[in-house]
Image 1 (cartoon, rainbow, N blue to C red):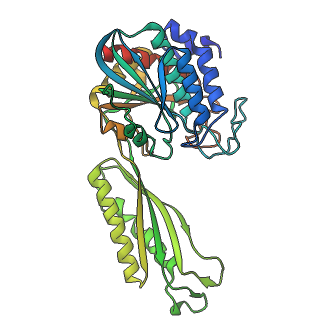
Image 2: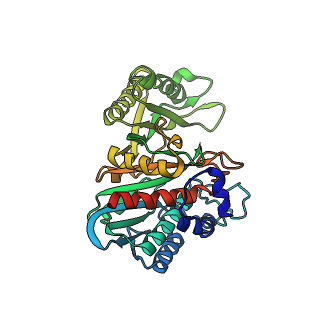
Image 3: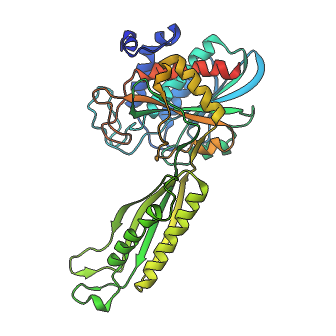
Length: 396
């Protein structure tokens, strides 16, 4: 891609970053063509380790299929963690791009290829220029899509030796136009809880429903009653979602089944709201089932903590980003209901996740996790430029 295409955006990109544009795009496309699922990112990690070695950055594997490296300054000082994620999704790509996935049924449909390419390029440019004080610790994290990758990294010691003072994560976002930057204070992304409800009735011939207990009717009442958890039991000032995504049971038109399985998710930003919704759903399930002579077993799988941005780190991101894209493009819309496991690291050290708009052009406005998801690749140098300037400002 021609570096002159960046000029159309009216952004301030330094000469070194402009000079790295072609390699940055090529690296992102190479990663995009070879996606790997969570905890299976062996090839991707090898690419990361080889690139870091070429840059002269001390690097090593961490936590299964992750990788880490460190760039030390000339003097002691603060330590900043920069994080990218590695894994793809179990999706068959439909973009038709020349760099389309070569792994059937696996796709980078969330921008992790872009995140990895930006962080590798940032590391190369920082290593070449050097850092006056402190250190930049690099984290290439596996298994973000599974929701347990950040915990694997924390357990492996990523925040220690040397101890991390703050963290910064970039996430490309196709629902924001190219050049727009979002770095909110406080809630940025929601907690994610998966639930599974097994409704147990008593199967019987459909012609004599009075002889059994119909779990399909019970399940329907549970889904209907649970709509009040947000609309009537949660303050309108507190964002929350209770979504039912699957209802399955029965195999024949003339048989009432013994049980029905319901799947869904709860998402919110505040611990007290999260707890109240989970207790409320349990109350609805048991109450409705008991009133209809059935049984409902509710199980939760906690996936992600909410992502809460530290105001100091997020504020510095906004200040730096304004110098790159212009203050009018640094915006603070409402937080996002999708989840991200970086929230677990934010619980340990002050951190921020910043969203880089990458949509608007032809083929770049499909949502994340869509088989036709793609990005405007001019977002890549924007991310690298902000990262390099942030490092300079944070490490002082």
